[in-house]
Structures are given as structure tokens and as C-alpha cells.
Length: 102
Image (cartoon, rainbow, N blue to C red; front, side, top):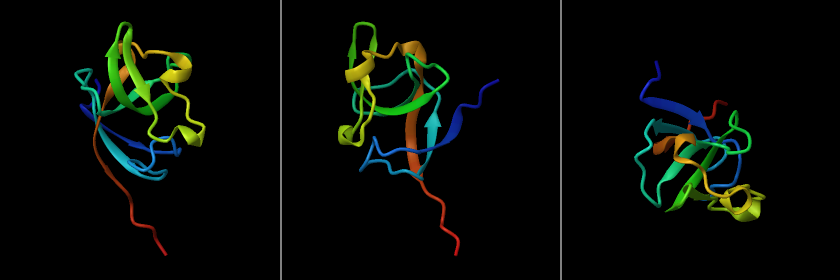
């Protein structure tokens, strides 16, 4: 059984300034998404790897996903093409961060 909400941590800079490395996200497991939303998806060439990207538009073959910060060396649909809808895990509901101790 999969929980409808999952928690993931941002580990790269590809979605700055919307999401920063170290942010924690709550993701709603769904494939019902709209352009403009930030999605958690499986990389089409490496299905074991999860990626966070913005749904730019729906195209034949799935969703065109783009990084908000392509200058960070991000890999997105400009490199691997559309992401099939079956690889979309969900959409980001909210972000938060933990207090730093010390």
C-alpha cells in the first residue's frame, strides 16, 4: 500500500528559487496534474531516480518537465524528452524546512 502523501527532501539546485537544497516537501501521489505545478517523477532513463521539475506543458507522450534553474546544470525534458504520465509520482503540495540546530 502506498500512502497518499509522501515526504521528500530537495538535494539539488535545479528548482531554485522556488525550492532550495535542504527543503522538505509534501507530495500528493496523483497523476492528475496541470501545467505550472511542480512534480515528483521518475527519470525516464533511470526509473530508480526521482526528479523534481515543473510541468511546462502536456505533449504527446506525456509531460514536458523543466527546471526553474537550468544554469545549475539541471537535466530535464530538454535533454531526455517528455516524461510518460505513468512515471509521474505526484505533485508538490507544500515545502518546509527543518530548524537548524546549534
